[in-house]
Image 1: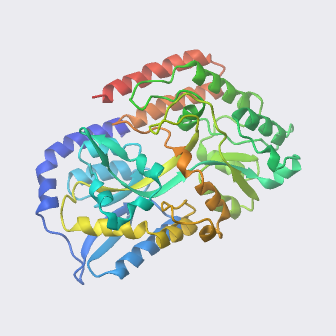
Image 2: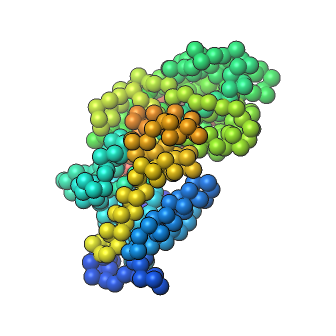
Image 3: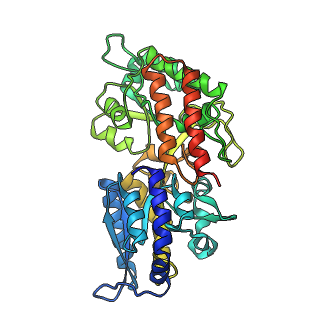
Length: 434
């Protein structure tokens, strides 16, 4: 089921089940453990070191008080959202879940999620310590009211990770760190070996939403108007095509393949999130990072800035509508406060390789992971590539991926590709407009 369909199903089922959900939230009983704690179900998708770290924090919370028990349940990332929608509408889903922000507004509007502005309004929860840009990504217009609809869980800016041995072998120094995409192209040339044994950079040919925001006019504006078909975007796509035409990267890679290329020593650079630190270390790749080069795009972000093209993966805690105002809600809020406090954000960051959500955490406290401390500096200037709409994300992302894949895999006229992308994306924007 694609995102469009899941939202439609979510709306329909929510309407059918609304009375039942309201009863469950407001008046229904809650399940308790044998020792009398209120049982709260949480869904997440962390299965590696990040999962063990999260489990440790959950265990600490459960042992810290006698009123609530968080039952953390592992779910596949690939299906967690759609499964959650179906389960919540029937009243047997999770009480809270971690998932991305891309479809958060749509699910907040259709009744799958309940917003948590009251959590932020309580000074005892210390939300003033949350990084403002992270909170901004889940601040939505809900029926004419500005609401905060989620709590930070794992916000991960991207960076350019590079093989320091290959960098030195090519005669590059810190002075060669690129600050523009033209410079990145030149560095990729120097890092590419003509015999095909080494590519300058591993570039996925999909997921370029943030790149187009930083270097062009984006895919759509903050007001939901299509902006894909512009001279700025055309110029950037032509520049990106140069990476492939010159043989400085390989077409046909998704993020997984790009990471494998970097971690196997086939490519000297890759653009990815903070989890690359541990992955590269595990493969014996000496590495460092630098910011994704700044662009000169015309896209204007909600805060009025432009030109950044640092993408991010934004995971958040969302409270599902089946909770309502039941006895579970204070317990969920207590966990949010616990999870995002200073000490636990140090623990989370060191164990998971995600930057901390709490701005009181210092670089010195992350000294065991200096590159995570380094990438944390990019959080304030990182944005979710496709977000800020009420629905249609899956379809819009697919249209964008078709555009970028055809840009690098074919010799088709880029203007024609932009025309096609504009037509399809306009249709989805119209479909989900008020």
